[in-house]
Length: 166
Image (cartoon, rainbow, N blue to C red; front, top):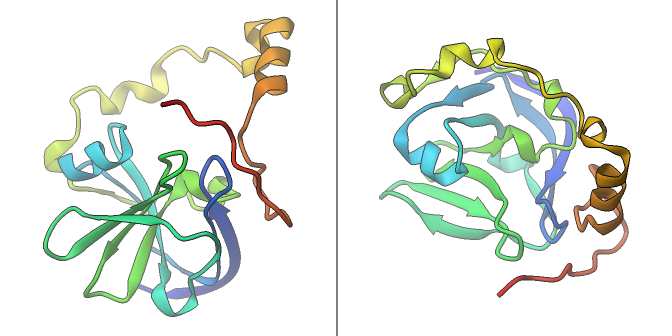
């Protein structure tokens, strides 16, 4: 795997946990294994790695759950956003592509863990495009925007806890 000099930042949905790195690895991929499906709550986990020696947590720290003897999964304890997969033995942290501020910068180059790939995965690009949030109606889109507690896709000077549901 090659190191790519690139400034990258990201974090969780609420903004309690933020990270930054100056290098990435060229391993962007979709993992379909059952562990990644459960950890991401999706049919695959989109992952791309940063070398551990360049990854810095700039706000808060992720909560960690050890999903196997050698793998840690990081997430925000406040909002639950999955943030990473970390094999404690290989020197890199695979960040969830969706947690990056600019996820479009890392198109996947491979499918891995394909023993767990759902049968309909190959058909998802052919399904109907429901359009942008705004196409659901201006009033609905404005209400979502006005009540959103989502942190913006960039670093901010401060963070305020959003309401949590019990």
